[in-house]
Structures are given as structure tokens and as C-alpha cells.
Length: 124
Image (cartoon, rainbow, N blue to C red; front, side, top):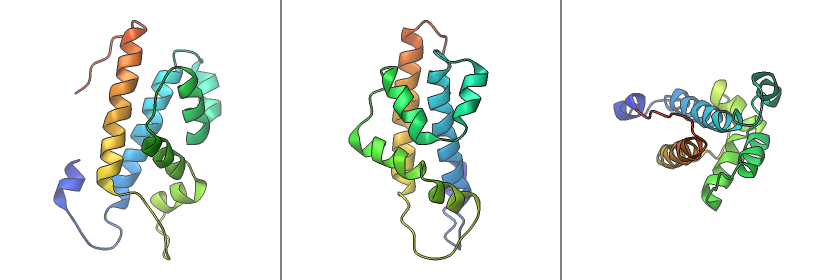
């Protein structure tokens, strides 16, 4: 959010911000899955967002259609490569505001589910 507040408009300045949101979303999903899977089993999921989403939904994570679509967009291998390594050419990436909103919603939903399961959660 601090990077986003700088509002740098040159080149690919938003890519680090994009990457941070994507990584946070992945970690929120993995935090929820930790209730069912061991660390080794979660490592086997690697960065497969689509698989993480499907498993998280089995653990009662409820996603709005827009959130699910956004997660599947960032789960696309080409999108992740685009965010990590700058590639030129046409592309469609969600707006940072949309990523921020989805990230907060999923964080709050996962926190609620973890608290319901008796896990202490502290959001800062």
C-alpha cells in the first residue's frame, strides 16, 4: 500500500505492487489450507492459485464471482510471469484497487474461518 501511495506512473512501476498482492493472496489461501494439510502437503501446491482456491472453497471459503475470476486471472502462469518479469506487449491485468479490495476481503474471510476453528488471528 505504501508503494501504491507513491503513485509512480512510469514504465512497470506497479509490477512490484501487483506481485505483493498476488503473494499475499497465495499466503492467505495457504493459511486456511494449513488447517487440513501438513506443511509438506501445502508445499506440493506450489504457486497453483487455482488449486489453492478450489481447496479453500472446500474449507468453506466463500468467494464472490469477481474475486474468483480475479484469483483465476492471477493464477494463470502467463500473468505470474508477467508480474515477476517485465514483458512487453498487450496484456490485461486487474486494477490495483480491485486487487486491494479482493486481498482485504479474502484476508478477512480467512481470518474469520480460522477464528471459528479456534486459531488465534491478529490482523494489523
